[in-house]
Length: 195
Image (cartoon, rainbow, N blue to C red; front, side, top):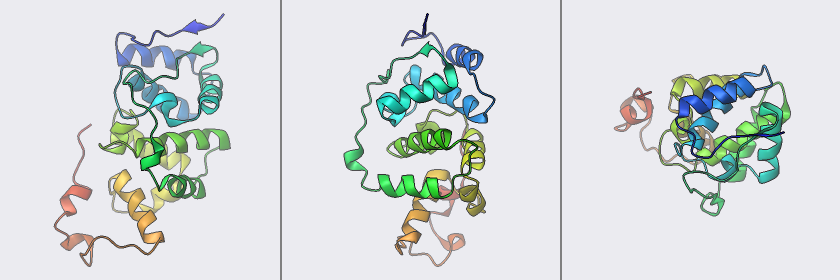
């Protein structure tokens, strides 16, 4: 018999507790996904239906991490996936997967898909994917994409950093400053984020 989670559960924290109880894996990704799903179930963040994954991927991920706990794939926020405005989707996915080193390729692919969908949001990446702090996102990236984490030696905000890496790989240097230290926008890329 499937347990059913109502789409309008009372609080993010109560949903999180239920998800953590049901999480059937010892992978740290279960913790981060529990937080993302709890946020998504109350309409927080910018993730669309199925967390930005395909319906089959979403179902497989839910089964892998949460067993028979049934959660509708429809975003409470009403957001729909619109990758048509994201010409760099394939580049983002390839960049993340090139630097992946998670213990399970399926887990890494799901996390990658969610992060790419989060890049469609207009806030900090940790907020757009429904994590509860930038620290959560940093730990998720260190675990799943250690090569990317190693490149971010200056602790640049993740979404800006990932896009900067894509631009540099293509030989596109949008910033006119010769180095970050003299750039007028320095504080916007490196200032502390509120949790």
